[in-house]
Image (cartoon, rainbow, N blue to C red):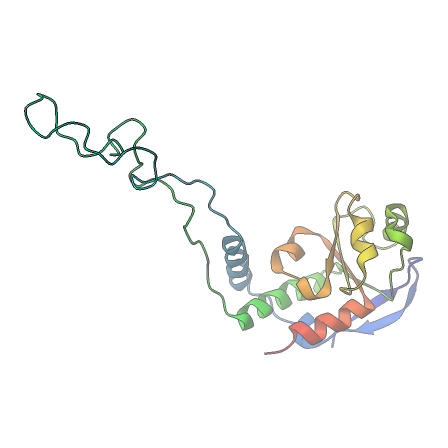
Length: 211
């Protein structure tokens, strides 16, 4: 079972804390992590480009002129794609679905791999608690400056009810806060260091280390 140092808000080590092997000692499979990143990116993708077909554009459905006798080419509608202002043929549509399926067990496995990699490279920092009064940014910056992650891109993981940390992190460059019950692979990969409170660690172990 892996162990990491446990720090207080003053940046002083107050002992060690054991980490669950099923979540923090998993062999890394880059292919599975890549699959999780692709799936997550695809599932949040939104199709913005949208063109109208001949059934959606404005215009009368009346035949522009009679079929024969005018000397002009025959046409059935002003909304035809070959007319200016007509519908678009084979244009992009916003109803496209980019979703990529990935089963829950595989997603959790990929998440465990990224967490395990953080622990293996000493990028995982546990703190016994974070108490920031009224979400003051300066207080959070002062706490982070005393930890080994000082000056580095840092993801702060807290218990869901700890709203003040998220508020305090909003104005800090390179720092972001995530609740323990909303972790994802991309969020972890975007930051070099992960700072986790003791209460958040308990939630993560219970939530993600199960079949």
